[in-house]
Image (cartoon, rainbow, N blue to C red; front, side, top):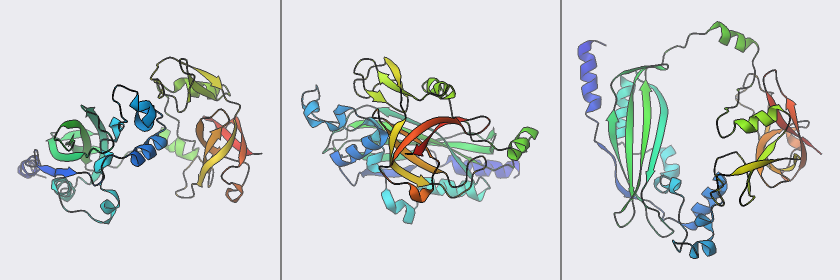
Length: 318
């Protein structure tokens, strides 16, 4: 692409800044208890302000509220997004990038801000614009541009609930050079290392020592997993832990048949295990065939070395 072509292309993409992707659109469903309950159960958030009407009636609000992080959920398009959607400014911008070779796409950042709560019966209205497009960047994935959409949410009275910024990188895919280390890794594959951070490093360190610990709130004694800094029940930041006996039962399970992943066993059985202490843990069921597994099956866990770099809890049928 010549300098003149590059300038003409950038003039085209920068003209999208400020364009409306979605006009003010009311959610198809009002905020409702059923969706709040389903969302909090999936997330594992037991805050009574969301689902316990009796508790909420005695609170300062006097009623239940929706989790702030559900803000974007109310306006999601649902199944129709998979069966075709009308053209909009974002779709046109993506098509323009693709036309000029920027076919790679990578979501890089989501940032939400909350200003007002909503409760069952409210309706959430979403407006979205293309807020900004960066200059051309050189990235590890290839040269490209970051663009950011800004979604603004209001209630049925026009009062601002919050905003969400979503940043995407559109880039020209580059062939990644193989290093000697990566070539060796392909010859002797191991599992992908689990991410260890400030909030969960202690848990993985205990696994390395052959133990599975469960985080416990020091104030209300509520157990929680996966590890996180705040108790969802009483919002306390103080915690300790107990060791699990690894007695459990299968609550849900699946078999990952495709694609085959180097370093992992063929057709691994992945399950949600309900531990005897009351929390759940995602782990592999081993020592049996997939056809032998059933919901409610009693299992016993062992912390074992699964390859030269990885120690994990695995569960065996009783």
